[in-house]
Length: 112
Image 1 (spheres, helix red, strand yellow):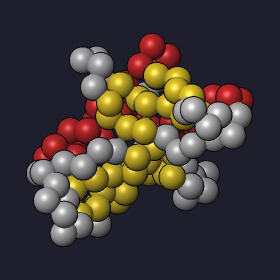
Image 2: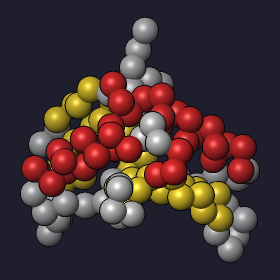
Image 3: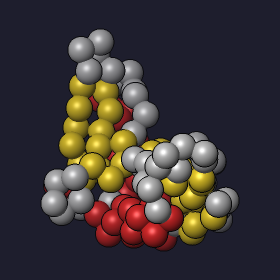
Image 4: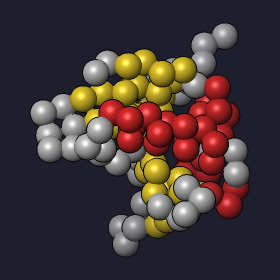
């Protein structure tokens, strides 16, 4: 059975490292912030693995244009990952469940 995975990438930006969590179907289900160092991005991945199973780490959001999204927070309340935008609360909640299911055991594809 296919599993979710983190894709670690590097760009030419000032803070070039970032990661995305992908579901088994390769859809991006969580995006990280940018990091100046690769080690920071790797620590971010570990933080996602640790915090993803915990309901209280999810910040449910709604934009002014009625789009839904969520942030995954670390224990210190800093955002470690952000979802895409969804058209319904139910779809957003399904995205949260996908992160919970995939993150703890996701492998890392290092493309740096």
